[in-house]
Amino acid sequence: MPEESSAERRVKILLVDDTPENLVSLEAALGGLDGELVLANSGKEALRHLLNDDFAAILLDVRMPEMDGFETAELIRSRPRSRQIPILFLTGYRNEEHLFRGYDLGAVDFLFKPIVPEVLRSKVAVFLELSRSNAKLKEQADAMRAQAEVLQKTEQKFRALLEAAPDAMLMCRNDGEIMMVNSQTEVLFGVKREKLIGQNIRMLVPAWSAQASRGVELMAMHADNSPFPVEISFSPLDTEEGQVITSAIRDITERKKAEEQIRQLNANLEERVLERTEELLRSNEELQQFAYIASHDLQEPLRTVSIYAQLLAKRYRGQLQGDADQFIAFIVENAGRMERLIHDLLDFSRVDARGTDFFSQTSCEGALDDAIRNLRSLVDESSAVITRDPLPVVAGDMVQLTRLFQNLLVNSIRYRSADSPRIHISAQTRGGEWLLSVKDNGIGIEPQYAEKIFGIFRVLQPRDKSSGSGMGLAICRKIVSRHEGRIWVESELGKGATFYFTLPRK
Ligand code: ADP
Image (cartoon, rainbow, N blue to C red; front, top):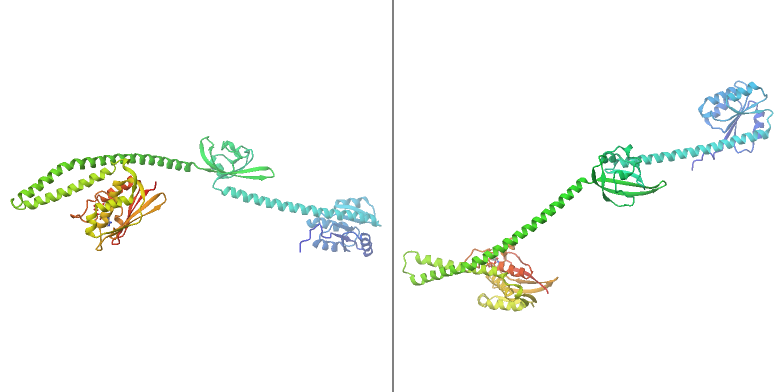
């Protein structure tokens, strides 16, 4: 059940008289008033009632045995709970001294016997009314106090929150006038709180604007006028006093420094990469030039060594002493080997030398046919079976694409397993390019060597008479990259190898 408010509760009036008939006539006179009448026939009894109850007024007979009206009033007044209750004295005679004593004791009025009921009624009615409006006022005051307490607690919480924030927090009006700051603000700007309240926030952050709503980076000023970068986030709030803007300000000096360092490092890195690339290009070109010149110029003298060694072998076989015949045979064999190496190196350095003039619409099927034709005897003697899917026409160098297929086919046959070689060539489109593959059933390659084998003079098997110079795949890679493609192998030892390469679709 909702608690009855004190204003609605029935107010009480205490009637005190030692003569029962008087009490009866008082009761009769006040009948019908909106108040509860409580009767007492002595001062003592009246005090007992006052211990437990509050009254809107007390009607007190002056002349009573034992404790008269004045004595009773004195005791009533001495107790805080009943001090404020208005007392109306009922008395038989108008005596000045009597009246003074009464008013002294805080009487609000005197009523003279014989009591006129109408007068009594109207006076008591006023007290009832007064008591009611008093109660209402008190209720309102209580409510306001409670509200103020809630407000105060909220503000305390808000301040605690503000203080706990890691950023400098400032609340200001729309025009920038500072209303509240936290202690981080004092630390960040080196200015005391008292000196900030009422000032404009622009003295700290000159470019501060009430319009900015999201986080922005601005410059702020320390107390000594030294500038530093900050990040501000704004939260505007519409209040009764107009818009209030809370700005959370964070010092980002360190962050900016780090960003600048990263920027500088990146710039340096970029510069160094460019320099290095240029260097590499230059040295690559020089190396190519060297390889070309060396292999080209070495060919002649080597040819001479080879021819004379062969001549020696032919003319003087069996006529020289000791191991001479065997030594000459070594010279002949290795001179030949060296000729092949130089020949392949020259081939390699020539791949780039062919300009794009040789590029035309080239049928890969045609290139493959030529390659197989060049390898006729190797294919026949190994009983290799070569199959193919339809192959595309591409913009390329016919001679080089033939060479590409040829090198891959040679390897597939050369590195065959115990089974006779089966080789399949296929092509498919992938994005803007063709993906071609040459798949065999040979000995395969350990994945760890998948990249190494494309290097110059890289071989995995020990060299013998039948092995190549290790230039085959290096030349393949160079040809493919001249055609703006890539080449790689997928394989496992003992499971055959598939060489893939891409060519642009134009
Ligand atoms: P080489 O002249 O030795 O054949 P390549 O550059 O053509 O030189 O090949 C490099 C090495 O890669 C070869 O020595 C071989 O070990 C390995 N290789 C190349 N193709 C295949 C293949 N189809 N199957 C297995 N191994 C291969």
